[in-house]
Image 1: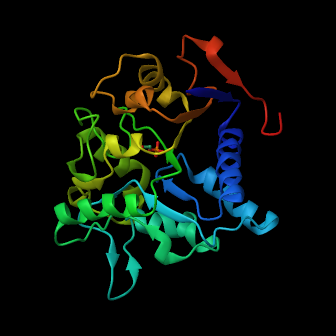
Image 2: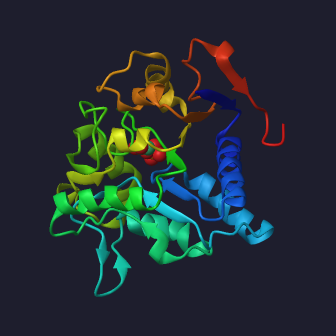
Length: 267
Ligand code: PGA
């Protein structure tokens, strides 16, 4: 695992985008695992800039998103991902701005009639695509990776999960509150890639920024591996793991001599 400490969100985002862009430039049909949430937005903005100004080409790229709320998603008759769905998030924050093929973008279908079957098929599609070359990750306030809440098996696969109260509260404040959504209608379940699925990615890139992530980052990177903090599973990742933090998120790490400090993205 390599841990990079950057001065701020902007440099963190550019560093992550650089890693993704290097892969896209070297492997035109790379398989990217993508994440939603506030954390990756800056990375997506930098990828959009690279597409517009440096011709970064996504035409053959395949993507798999980590998760989706159960009950909201694509309305096929309108060909519209509902507001607040992660499908809508990805379209607005990335896909509509770059030359990616919609049929190559995979997001768990929150409106599926048969979630168990859909989850199995999602796993099958990842395998059929050759596995995930690079999985982008955030970390939840409770240490979750994707929607693998505390207590999720570190061997878990794509499945239906119950969201914990803290996650529902975090999501309410970040994405639902100002959109006319009624709090009692918040999704309480989701479809998520499992921890085991994530650990099969060839390169996992986890980002975190802000003081509010400092304690959980220290537990995830330096604490004992436990299903109570599913991000600790990255310590078991058999491939490559890159963690990019801003200095606030890194502020409670103790073993700093193993971290790489970067001042800006060209250094
Ligand atoms: P955030 O969410 O990027 O909005 O902090 C991360 C997560 O819950 O995985």
